[in-house]
Image (cartoon, rainbow, N blue to C red; front, top):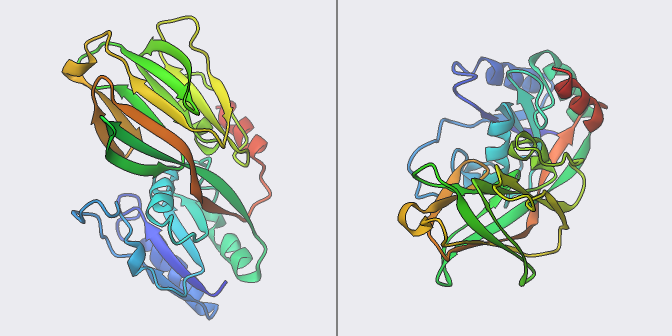
Length: 286
């Protein structure tokens, strides 16, 4: 690789100390490196932090400084460019951002010499609809979460798979997760942990009020529709669908969120031989 682009979390690297150090290192090796300016703001919703049109065409790799959240956002903003991403974690070891501060230089050397692999992570595409009118469509690398909005009360959900009714249940919410997202919110509510290279979708209820609401694993080629029920006054307070904990849309009784696998993937660079099981074991031992 010869040309790099750095996206940094300005809260974790406020003086760009890490970003500048990386650029200097790469330029000493004869490489080209750009640092993104702080672009967050009102852009009409076209992107959150990174304007993909401002990433030079010759860029071969994006270095993301921050943590898993920063990497998630970069993957969504740059999804149309399909550029490989390497996460540099400024805190503890994350599931996505595998490189810590002490490992930056060895990781850069591996990028330069080609000693790396690229993992293809599936993403979800979701559309929120009111009376067959699309209110919002977005993608997610981790999950799409539908929860109550307003008062502390439960929501009724009707679940359909490929147009066929699957089940109804009452809960605080429901998570539709990718394998990558299985170690996020899904894990915290008791959902199954899945290896990130798998191709499937997970449905996990949040604090279900019925005994039949168990996590469900579905193949990646199905279409899932979640319909908001009417039994608990949802039309008064509404519910809310959130994509990767970022973009969201309010829902009322009868509204649907239709979810399927995206035709785009997130490309994650691995420079370490650390397996998913090793990372998982370390996390579980804390």
